[in-house]
Image (cartoon, rainbow, N blue to C red; front, side):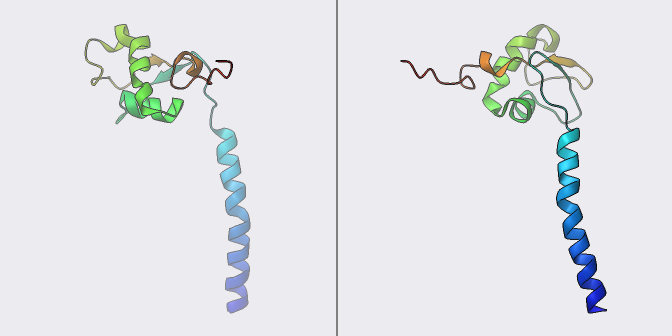
Length: 100
């Protein structure tokens, strides 16, 4: 019984990292200027944090999509497609200028 349990545990431990690697490979990479479809529960700050790595980038996300979103950035509709701006166009996400 102990041998079987130990064997099953070792087998399971060996499979978990492989499954995680497969899941990572299947996740689509963010392409600059790509459309993102709003899902239930999304907010601009959550989308910005997930796709751009910084929740404060929601302001740039709103600026790029103000016509689509409307006057209230706190209200985005499920199913709406938003244009995700390039991170280098967001000052706080752009690489620092090392020359001065």
